[in-house]
Structures are given as structure tokens and as C-alpha cells.
Length: 80
Image 1 (cartoon, one colour):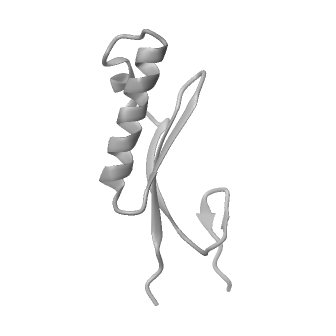
Image 2: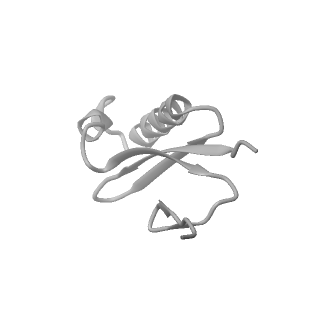
């Protein structure tokens, strides 16, 4: 049975943690995250491209998790 995946794009900044999720692809999660960052920027009256400096930082992460599996510290737990 093929496992289902949940793709996650996240960004940690000094003041906030942002996350977006997609069942289809990492690209879709990233696009949703970018849209959320634009909304946040408008709410806080930030420059239109305020988030671009973070997209290549260690705080920006794209990953996936398998639905129905257990994780510890973002690592899949595998029985030995």
C-alpha cells in the first residue's frame, strides 16, 4: 500500500513561525506559504518582498511526512 504524504513548507523568523501544508506537492505547499507571507506582510505593513531574505536561510524548510506514521523530532520512527 502506498503511503499518503503531507508536504510542509515552513519558515521560522525571530518573531513568528509560518507553515503551509499540501496533499499534492512541495511546490503547492511553498506557493501557499508564499501567499501567507504576503498576507502577513500586508497586515504588518511590511515591504512587498520582506520575506525574500528568509527563503534561502536555515529557517525555511520544505519537507514531507507520511500520514499514519510516527515521528520524533521530525524524524520518522522505524522499528528495528
